Length: 219
Image 1 (cartoon, rainbow, N blue to C red):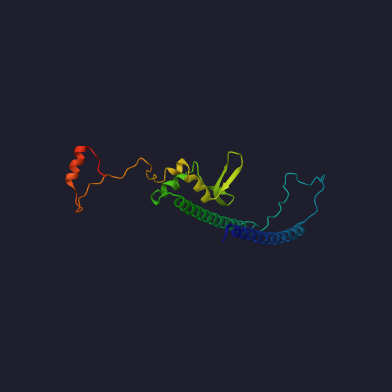
Image 2: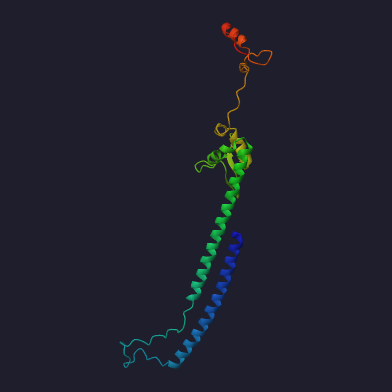
């Protein structure tokens, strides 16, 4: 069940329990009232006048009889409270499971984007920790989804998907630090020296001696 379905079930259960409890309370109240009226009518006697000298002011009036039987709201209220607690725990567990599922999907998407945008496989874990650091996470929860939200230099709010955010980050100095260094290029590079070879394909040692005496490089 989804959290919304569980909440709806809680509301329905609480409503049904409340209606049943109200009906039970009304039934018990009517019975108690009837019993009380019957006992009072049987024992009712004329009240003495206020100025009657025979009335004893020190005698307390007869207390009203207490209703017998189980008082309304005891076991039923406890049962309802236990039901509400159980359903609330189910909602909490469902919400925790849903949140864990969403975070897992976010993590998978971030790792895939890092690999897609040039982070080597052996550095993806380190890069992942960098973009999900709790002090400054690159990806945040945006209205039920994941992405990056920031304000650009023109003051406009920008929202990026996970792939867009990681692509932009990978081109920053922070992102480039996780990429392999580019190969050295330029006009100044020279091919490695080659030992001179004779007609038979072997090393021409006499040519080497001549080059060494003349200070020339191998080529």
